[in-house]
Image (cartoon, rainbow, N blue to C red; front, side, top):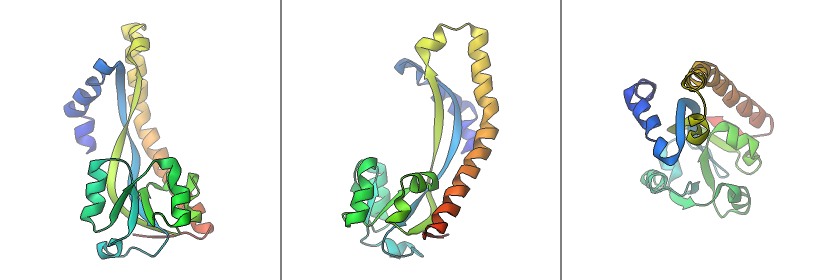
Length: 176
């Protein structure tokens, strides 16, 4: 994935943001998304069967969860702590930092490290602001962002480790 994103295809995609008045500066890794739930450990795909899983309001994510045998339940991010707590849903999918920072470990003790999706993120800037800068300053900003990628990627891996450790200390279990 990174060879493609850091190559010509990725560069073309970053440039495609300009008609919307954004400048794509670089790609970075925000980690994989995994399943977690309040019912049981997920050891095989069959364990997802019939489980109500909160997903992003996206046909792609609903199709993925449905194909795995679970019941996709789209809802806004801010609503699913109480939905997990009250049993409206039984699980969700997200990354470790989100699981921990939203305290979902309190209501969904079982975290499965399955990495079912990996979504790269983009650093963007306002095209209107960038166009006011000299070409040299624009290039300096782009270079600084691209130079930061290895640091951001490394710190991203670290930021995924500490929520796992802290969640475990609070009673959550994880499984690969």
